[in-house]
Length: 392
Image (cartoon, rainbow, N blue to C red):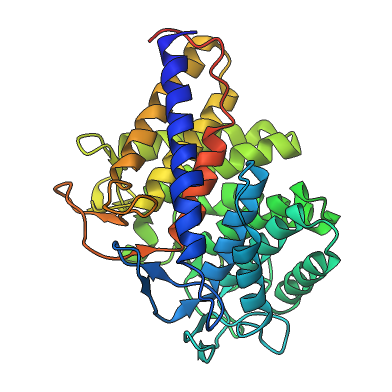
């Protein structure tokens, strides 16, 4: 076994141990509100709950996280969190039309009742994740189809993709589409009907045709009603973390669909995010660039580090030779080391969210929503086989 294989095995073991022995127990035992229901938005770094208004996406993400934990072989209690999340979606967060409210108070009063595309993408991901570990519960699939069909009937863009509101508000955004794409892939993996494949096909092609810059290969965030980059500064914003995340999704879709046209754009997204969107002095992927690849915001968020990991797992799957794969594994391990900077906190299992330009961290509570990113990255990391790597 090469030294690189040993290093890969070590980081896979270390992160999985952190997840199973520290993170999952604390976000279950402290992160679930056993009195009012649902899950807390955040835990202070002394592991006490922060009882803020609750975004529905957080409950959905925690369902995903604990369902994924079970699929990864975690033997601890996952049902407490899955039930808390699903009961919140079906209870306080449930709107009369079958959709979900975006934000509620800790006591379940609606704070934001307007449609939020992003939250519905995560509701669909939650139902798919729960269905994979509870395949006999057909209500999960029925609820997902209800939400999906409501989106198609009420919020479909007249040409491709989805609106942010009905009547329309601008800008249209790529980020909710990315997570709806993720949810569609999850439902394909869970054995869902053909409409999930149709949805994934449409979003993936919209990405190639409109989201990705035709000249430099970057991915824009904000668009007008005809899928042109919105005028002004917002139309020039690039998020390196999203570059990595879209690359991972496009490689997954290439494998599912058998269409290799998504591979080259994915490679280019990784190249941009690594070369221009990652501060190698801090070993941290930063928040925002302009479309000429100059830095807009050099703070670093934890979630972007997890997307860097996932992107290099995807690149490993594309490697044609041992040397090429070894090069990607070196970057993968570097990405893990970048993530681990955020995990150095007084209470094991919590994490920092924002890194300043000088490498220090913003002193704030750990957001529950980030566990979704972390567990997905660790699961992807564990898929990489270290056999046959070169010594680099």
